[in-house]
Length: 289
Image (cartoon, rainbow, N blue to C red; front, side, top):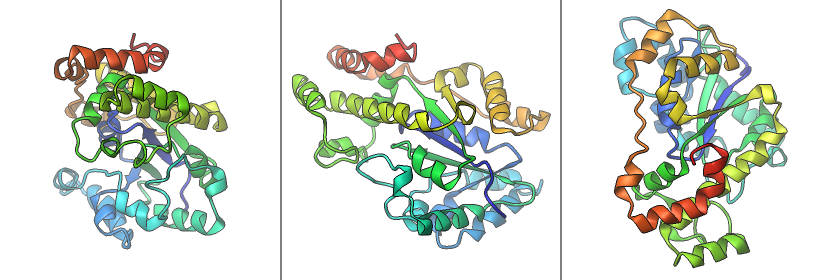
C-alpha cells in the first residue's frame, strides 16, 4: 500500500505536539508509529498488526493505553542515520533515490485498509523540504506554543542539548548576533534555550515557503486547549478526513490542559525578563504579547 497524503506534525520540542498527536491518533482513519516501531524498528509490520488490533472493539481500550503514538527516534535512526540529529535543517537536496525509497517503504508498513492515512510527529528541525521531496502531497501541521512555556519546559529535562553549550548541540553554530546576545546575558541557559526557540521558528518560516498554503496548517497549542472541538474540526478538514460523532466523543474524553502558567511561577523575575527580551519578536508575531 502506497503512502498518500501523509500528515506530518512538526514544531519545536516541548510545544504540546505530543498531546496533539495523541488526540489526533484517535481518528479511525489514521495509522501511526507506536512504541513498537521504536523498540523494533526493523520489524515495522508489527505496527500494522497493532493497527488491526486497535480496530477490534474488544482490544482498542487496552492497546491504546499501552501503545500510544511515538516520535520513534530509534525508528528514524534505522530509516536513515542523518534524520534525527543533523546540525542544520534537512532539505530536498539531502534526499537520495535510495533514501526516498527506503523511507517510503518503511512508512507504508503501518497502513491498513481502514487506516489508509499516515500520521507522523517530528520535532526539532522542520525537515519540511526533505519530507516533501519524498512525499510531494504531504500535509504539514505546525504546532506553536508560547516560547516562554517552551523554554521553561526545556530547562526541566536533563536531555536538553543546550546543557552542553552551543558548540556541542544540534542547532549549528550561533551567528555573531546570537553569540553576542548570549554573552550579553552572561551565557544564561535561559537565554540559550530562547535562542534555540528562535532558531527553530525561523527555520520553520523559511521551510514553509516551499509548501503550498493549502498543505500547511499552523495551530497554537493554547487555542487547541481552549477550544478542542472547533480547532480539531479545522484540522480534520485540512487533512481531508471525516468528522464523526465517535471521534468527537473520543476527543472529549481526552484531557487537554494548558500549563503555560508554570513559567511564571518557576522562573525568577530576572529570568522572565531575559525571556521577554530574547523572544520578543516571536511573542509579538504569535500574539503572546
